Image (cartoon, rainbow over all chains, first blue to last red; front, side, top):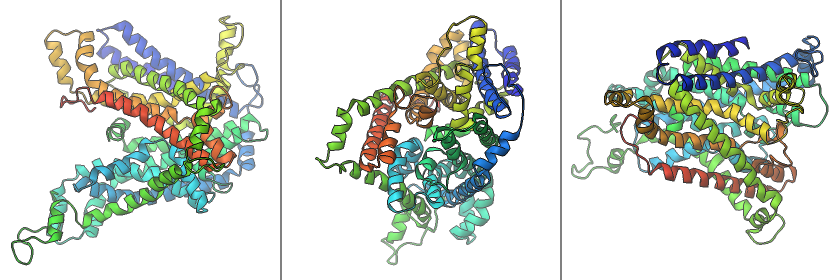
Length: 291
Length: 308
């Protein structure tokens, strides 16, 4: 947490050197805002992390004592092993299937202009723009009707709805970067589409596919609404179990819930740090925002 | 088109003059490569378009009988349901506006290259990793009556009574800012870095000061991007569901429309009413977006290097 609080100050240094002449008051206000945001964020996270290690904590600045047993308790009470297994199964299935469907579609959309292309593009755009809770309720209704909801399969299918278009949108720029003469040359040498895909484009697209896969992984692990609407007792992912622990009936020690929240955030953070090795968030958001 | 898949020049139709259908289609971009789009498109038609149409149809078939519009009539005549639209808008619009407007000066300061920019963008992604529940827990414990903030305020005699910031409107609002601000900021930053810095340099050579450059050059080029950012932030804030339940007052001041829809569909098992509310939610959202984008289309979007 210390890192989170110190970092904006250290970042401010070089910038202050670089451009502080125009309006130093405005500059201070801006950096003050950033610092204020991070300070509160750090305090917010620290509270949860401290509480998850606290024996009891009420009204004082720091907890009365420290213990790690809440993590063990949470692990046992919420069957976290099973929950994490389900989460991993859902996430991996969603990543693999959305890549298998999305990458070829991105290739075709990047390389061909065809009648009705704007319509298809719109179809791939809408599930990303419309928030999951809006289309989640009709989707869950349909999945309940065909008896898919409640099973892990239903959760996977529901999570694929936003991730397939997401893979397509992330992959289109990556495909566009590859010179189309390379495919043409391969065709001249007699390669079919399959060969081109696996022998020529596949290796060139690996960085893009990795980036898309990791982002889909993060999205799926963090996807609350769709999983919440379609999961049953044995198919809930970590984020839904966490929500139920807070909002559902029954009285639990808040430390236990906090311990689970820390586990969740820790794993999300790890995934995000890995993701940021592969993608620059600024570029990525532009892509998503533009289309 | 440029890859000219399968269309070797000279491979015209059998009688030489008329080209085969396959060839003519290939000229318009329709060839076997397009088969690659088919699985994705079918998947979305089946799981996105069909559920939507099914929901639309269901919303006109009320479970309690009455005319096809009975559900819509119920929604708009029952204040407990009708007011959820206002509640949601009063949370979503200010939160989205704040996120976008605060992002502009900060992003303007940080648009250049400097050491540690990547660290800062990484730090900004942290709130995305927090997830709803940790944010909610953190807000309840940090801003709650016995939390650090109130303790600080009372120890320094700034307030007498604890400030109530959770389990009401403000709790949800803060949660929306924490999750929405980094997203809006990253978008604004990327739009700003897309504006050609030479334009500002040219203005500077012509004698324009800092404020003038921002007001006359950068800001007008940025506004279309801001409109998009506002739309995306608004959509995020509008669909608030978990935090309205956890840090809000889900049966009163933060009963947002998504809670009403969930309640109807999965607690009362009136799928028809649930679909109706979902459709209304989608319609309100689209109306606001159409309004903003309609205004945006009247703005300049030339090739000045602006990404908007």
